[in-house]
Length: 109
Length: 111
Image (cartoon, rainbow over all chains, first blue to last red):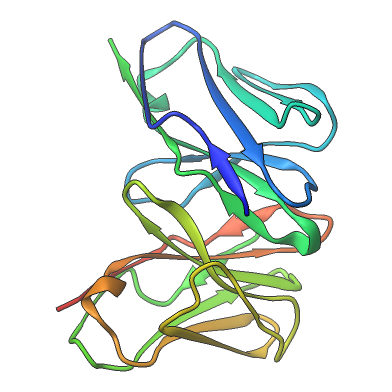
């Protein structure tokens, strides 16, 4: 079966750094996505990792270790608008994309 | 910009009705997907399609069917709507060399 785990909820303070972890056990792996989703809206693309290592994009970074089945999303200099759900998703063979249940992040002033 | 358009933002239907959810993408993507999203369960794949007239079952296909007569359009059909199909439905498209783009979603309520 396919399994993707991430924490249900996290809280952080404006200006801080937060790390959202994702572990996966899947049959096949062609990359890992992170999406951001504000309440009532569609998921929007944040990052995509295919190879091991860190990908940095502005305030957001994403890390992948394929041997450990592990990824994290790092958000720096948190802003109130970063309050949202963060979805970890694994791309399987033949382009099928499966999701974890999402992590709801609340940023407080 | 790639655009994925879902025909309705909100929909209310009665139990037993046949329901059509339409999705159209404008970037000539080969692959299209239907997900439903429920609190605590995340996005779950219902059906997907790699090409016109092709369809594959996802993780929760029961109670649903799909149609893809044209490359840009992928329809989700609830043959006889039930209250447990009340959910947010999201359509997405992708191509091999491109990421996934989601529509804005259809919030379906079955009463």
